[in-house]
Image 1: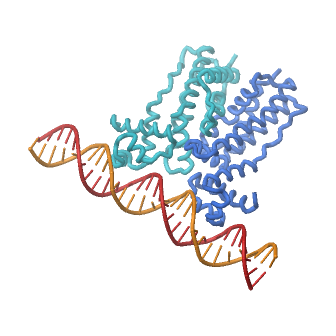
Image 2: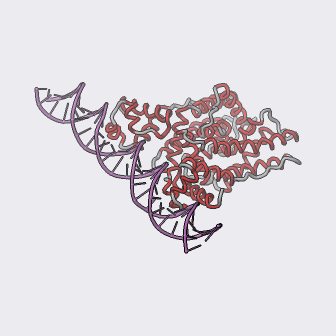
Image 3: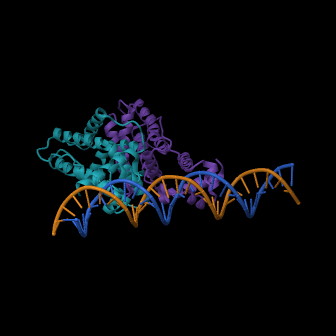
Length: 198
Length: 198
DNA sequence: GCTGTACCGTACCGTACGGTACTCTGTCAA
DNA sequence: TTGACAGAGTACCGTACGGTACGGTACAGC
């Protein structure tokens, strides 16, 4: 992935945030100061451009590392809290909203793999990050659950709840930082009450 | 709303389920055996047709009545359980998925009020239904919470979690009836553990 | 200097679709 | 019987956009 291509993809990201999935290829060329022909040469067609953009964004996201050893009840809850804050902040960001909207639309018309990509880098990635922490918590005698998947599901629900779908549906109001902190703390505490041991 | 118009709108609903928001007005005319001109006369433009369709569907949905008096801890939890089952069933249905996809797309391009309508008949309606039950539960000394809104949020999260967004993003697998029952029972039980009194 | 390559800018083509106009047919009331 | 009207079917128009073609420019290697 050359420097120039990344510039183009970042331009696409900006366009998606600004006007959603409806942007034209001509608009991309204009915004990125490149020719349409080059775009088609590089990415094949509009879907290829979109897919490359989503992959490019996904490759930029790095989730925070979670501690897995020397866990105490407090450090575990703190880790959950931090994870929740980070997750909520990303989720309510303009970029995430725009990408998820595009992915949802495309999953409907079913003519590209955008939905699957976002699914992999969204909910599934969250679970993959979370599961080891939960296992470690169980191994340390801090958590009690049968299915790690159920625990992940519950945690997702407590953290995100209807925040994401409301944002996707265009609700103006979005939680600010302090509200995110409150929600995250509550979610982490609730999770510990449901799955904590002792 | 005449009989004939309702037939047309039902045809639109079917089309949306079958091929998402991307259907053409010509396809609607074909499917409903009416002329395009009639469609434009009745609904103004494509957005009007879409909006009327979503409103029509919303008017068909009737949420189950919730008991609010003679509450016991068991009847309250049972009511929550039933509500959750119903909600999850609707939410994972093809129709709901299709409508929510369309609403999300339109909220992105921001050229119609679809998002707001679905928001009103989705998350907001759920909260409005739930809030009185929670208040009654608190009045009966069965629940303990400060903000009814927070309680609603938690309940939504426990019930829906990432089920809806995953379905919207096109995940093949959807919970069947028995899984929905399991999830709902767990959610209701968890909610009672978090907010129940005594 | 010569040639090939990569790329920009833009003109262009085909098509799909929203929206309109017009014709034809059935219905109903006077 | 006839006139008015509603609505089906269809032809048509304008436009937006995906995708292609091509001319022009900068630059690298020889």
